[in-house]
Picture: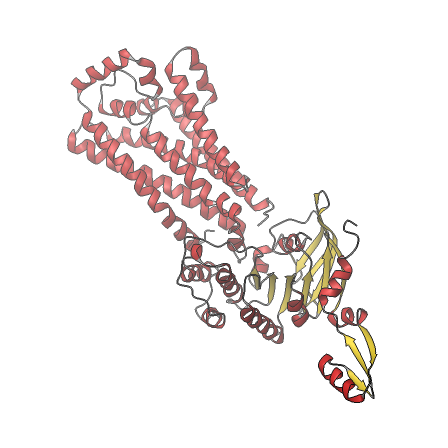
Length: 266
Length: 272
């Protein structure tokens, strides 16, 4: 099903990016968690009162009193959305469309390896990268939270939260992968693979800012990721995450099918 | 038995571009030259053979297998040199060849080192920094190292110096001896003339003629008889111009190269 030689090469190519994004996430997670201080919350709430739109647009809301609530406010609205998303966009494009565009796809296909195998392998590389980032972030959050505030973080809640986050990123990755499979030109692959997630994120920011723009939430898949809801165990929030997961599976399968059937002018 | 069979293959890209009703059959063990200028449809035909493009009209088969449906099966015994070499720039030549042999699950005793030696390839450099000729050599090594039965070569000697071109032609002759089928696309008349059994000439996407090299040459051969003043002069003339001397007249045959034949097919009306 997979070609391990290709898989190894591509995972190796992902390492640099994973290290960079891992480092950025490490920095932010460490800083944000160390900032958790129920007293500090008061001052942050003051910020919120001063400029509620700006704070809300990046997903920070007032009144987060538990550690996980605090983390949702300050990590899950921006840092943990944006950086794994960047990874999906860059890697998604590089795994298929770049090869087709440059013509080196001919090297991969002029061998007794099925197109399906090539596509499945590249998909697995993308998913592996997302999983690595998610597992790393989870481990990091647990370690930092436990060392700074022992017993404050309910790990089962964090696991639920990050499972939902993973569904979201698998879905974003599937959009990038599909774009990469459909377009033979990196120009268009990036336009769609990056354009759609970024546009959706902007809509999400808009929706967060206020009542007038709230309707925007019906036009962005980020709404399906309801961090507070998942932690609280709301069924709607869980359904949202499941929908993202199913959507991802559909789009990945779609990408592979398109790639197997399309004409390659390489 | 034909190793490569193209039947009524058409692909219209609009504006006169594409290939139209191309039918070619190459026997097992035959070397077929596919001659045509740039943009005449050689690479489009080859993309169909490689299973990169699905035929819209017509069909193509290799070893009686459909080139689109059974593309991975066909690739087991096929060697391919692309017209435009594009490998992985981030690798060195050595890493690339190692990657390809693992990717194809080749056994250790393949022809890699033999080919590297033969073409004096220096695989230590990053592919990105290689010259066009060096990349071409890398392409040759990766196409031949698994010792395929069918070779599809799209302008394989482009970028090679004359010495290496000769070595490549020798290699093709050896492969032919071994009974390999070769489909050689080229616009190098000499290369095709020296190696091919039959030649197909394509122009504006249409196959103009398919014939053996000999027939093509004969059809276009002309001879002249020149009368000279003395038998001595005639003898010298015959020696210089490779003619047949009788008394003081010499018969010279203009062995027109394929180039001239080629020009015959292309000369004149440009847009048929």
